[in-house]
Amino acid sequence: MATSSQQRICIGPKVPTHADNPITMLLPCPSSGLPARYVIQDGGLYEMQMVDSEGLRSWFVGDTIQSDGALYLITPFDPVFMLIPILDTMRQKTADAEGRFLMLEGIFGSCSDQYPSLRHLADLKNIDKYLALVCDVRDSKSASMRTFRLDDEKVMEWLKKKVDVFVSKFETIPALVDSIAYTESLPEACRSEAITQSALKLISANLSDSWATKLSANYQFPELDKLESRTQLPNMSDYGKRSGMDLDDEPKAKEVKKPKMSVGQRKLAKASTAGMKPMTSFFAKKT
Amino acid sequence: MLEARLQTGALLKKVLEAIKELITDANFDCSDNGIALQAMDNSHVALVALLLRHDGFEPYRCDRSLALGVNLVSLSKVLRCAGNDDIITLKADDTADVLSLTFENTDNDRISEYELKLMDIDSEHLGIPDTTYEAVVQMSSAEFARICKDLQVLSDSVQIDVTKEGVKFGAKGELGSGAVTLKQNGNVDKEEEATLIELQQNVSLNFSLKYLVNFTKATPLASRVSLSMSSEVPLLVEYKMEAGYIRYYLAPKIGEDN
Image (cartoon, rainbow over all chains, first blue to last red; front, top):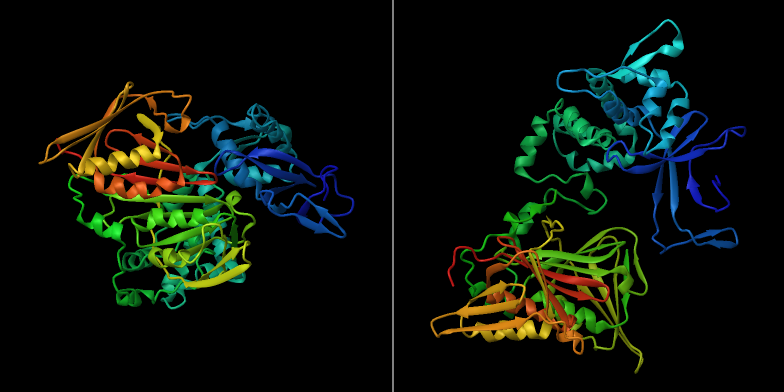
């Protein structure tokens, strides 16, 4: 897919031959609110991700070399994730008022100072249906007068369903199964909790912090918590970083003899640390 | 896998000398961005953060993030086998079992190859926020090393007072007392020796001299050092290199009247 005269290497969904030209645009990322690149084609929304080579790599294309070594990935993106934060701001909910109902144009039209491309979302296929999934809908006499307002309960229901779908498909995705490989030797209850937790994390990656917290409040992981108190579980960020993670490592660690200290360290061992607080009291541990 | 070729091997030797006196084992975290290391000393009152950026190597290649667990004493022993002018190439594959080091001497066509066994190190990374310090002193690194060494004769701790006029290092002990004051100067002739102070607020803090002397092992890496201080937060001693830095953090001594 060539978006301009500049050539890029891109992995994307199969495009029908008579499809419209794709529109690429900047939209606020649902989790961070920062601008990110999205594509709309044939009424579908796609997320674009770039694997940046930082100028260190390039591509061979046939007999030529292309200096831009980045790889672009275009994957379908559920528009509802995109809609939640937009609707959340547009309804202007306050402590004592539920907020206002808006028409389609009102939702995507007026908040577009920073993101004029938001208006394209109104052209998505079945946008009404997507909105209805998470909104209270008020129908006026004519269909064009439909108004929408985000409904917290509906959002939660939809998100929970999304998690359920993920859980049901979990075993079919090898990369995900690998990520919870540490549970193989653990009881079934523990494993199924790990799957739910993993699904929850993946869904939350597309949500703002406040929604992610609300969603996770619906889930408890008693078995995993028990396990956590015994050993430190690897989290998703460890995945791919460490190979051969082995829970049986613990007993071995005790056999390691005390490492020898260098001259400087022996001197430091004599230093008085009275009145000095440990580093961990100044800097938080990274999780 | 990791492959990093360093034109001036002396740099790596100096880096190792600078950290091996503070910590025993540490993970070299290799990523696209370069090679980084973060570790605390045995008493957990000091922390060192090292970064060798990718552009300091030619070429640098790291496809996947790797943590290379190294005993620093062993590594510095191996590095002693390298000449100062040698080109050093570091290599490790994704299993991270061994670190291979190649030293090439272009003058006499000598190539030496070493392999160092790696280990699994459980390391906790601390998130260090970017903060604005109340006082930042930039000075000659040799001068800082000398002051710390001199004052150590008198006491185990030093009081550092920064005002807009200058920075004062004072020590008091059974023997007597001593102080070195450096006036803020924009010495244009000797830029390397100038003492520059950026000040939001005067600070007065106590630090362990043994630790500061330990940090000055990094002096050969940079001609300048910066000391960043705010009350009741760790002192940051930073040595900047061409492509990277070495930063030491030290907790202040609180509740000690010197």
